[in-house]
Image (tube, rainbow, N blue to C red; front, side):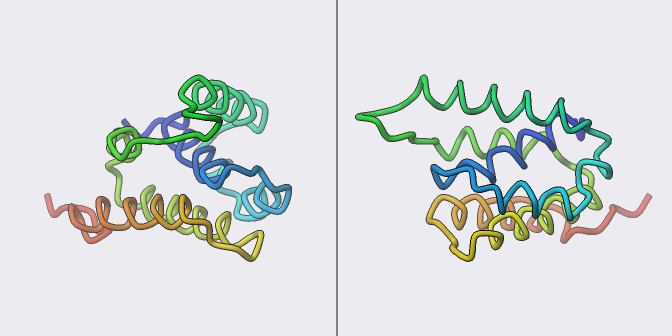
Length: 128
């Protein structure tokens, strides 16, 4: 829960969910400093990204990658810290905006993350 790898998988998914890994998206992620915030080395992120792409390619249907909502939700469920959710969502928007085009897959991922994460906590820590 809330591991650097879990957060990294969500960022990696944000980059490839539109079917295209744009250099502008990588640059936006690096400018956001989210990898430093989640304590994930760039090389470790690159490996997560490669692993995700490999996994997605094994599930193609007629050459198109289809990602079930359940898969997205299980990735999002790995993050339950409100501050981390907020930071990730900010970085996800920066990544999505980097190429000046919001693809359907990006919109779905952003909407699911916003709905799931804000519905549970309103992005605030629970009172002790």
